[in-house]
Length: 202
Length: 158
Image (cartoon, rainbow over all chains, first blue to last red; front, side, top):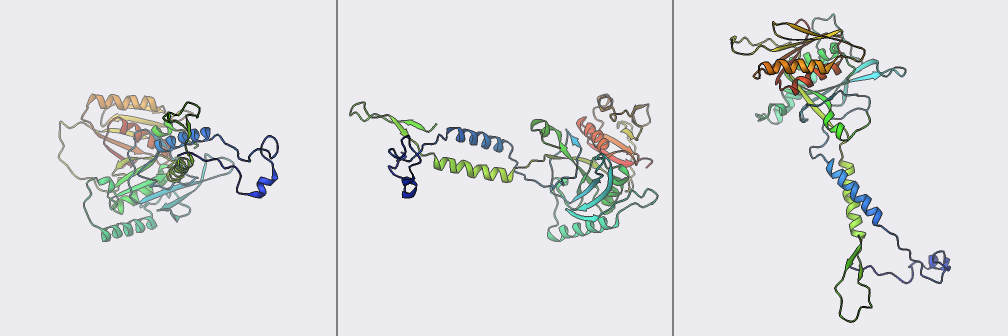
């Protein structure tokens, strides 16, 4: 299908301005723009984006403050309840964790979680309550057997923690999950294999 | 791009053989695809490391000891050192340095223990309270890479 070049622009006012053309108005006001470079660039962008396309989508919301550790042998993410352990850092030393916040499905449960090493039962009551509630919801909606137990939202939980968190805090979360019936723990990590392929800012 | 040859009409060779192709729909389509892909792009790549019986809070199920079953690998993760051993056997300590732990050496030791018994799948990690999560995930990652399928993470002393 051929492109017809108009003799005159539709806008008479523009045409009367006589801005375009070598001799100010003696020639037509149309300008041919070379779009080859633009189309090439768009093709490259489309190919890049298609190669990076992930059909499973983004299942975990990662806060900008959360620095996840990297791992090379991780499995795929499954959609099960998410417990996050974030770390508020001091402005002077970004490696130091000042305050730890506990989230469940993106909602703050405990704004300042302490290690509480003296307590013989270090479980977190708020988290346990939410997990039990979540399991009851899933069981009400559809109680079924999962072929892959990693996808069972009544026994599996994703734990997403900052890499500078100490085990004393993580221990409380893990123990709470287990006491609530979520014995299968999946620790969220950055995928180092994909990171090597496409480096991203930490 | 943007040009195509047209068959000659047979009325002399004076007319140009070039034909213009309308690129507007093509560019529109590319723009639409680009917008869709940009909006659905996932920039953070996340994976999962699985641990079982994580807290050690649940009581262990009593089972009959099988003499042919390989003993599990035990990893004691402390702030000062990481100790790797076959349960009940000689300990191999890996002290902490300024840059953390020597994970290459730990990986070699795990590989050696795995190669000694290929059917060994069980690995127990016992961690001290002060150990950073980053180091624990690294140990779990190395263990998973060495084909250890049953990894447990418990507090030290349980």
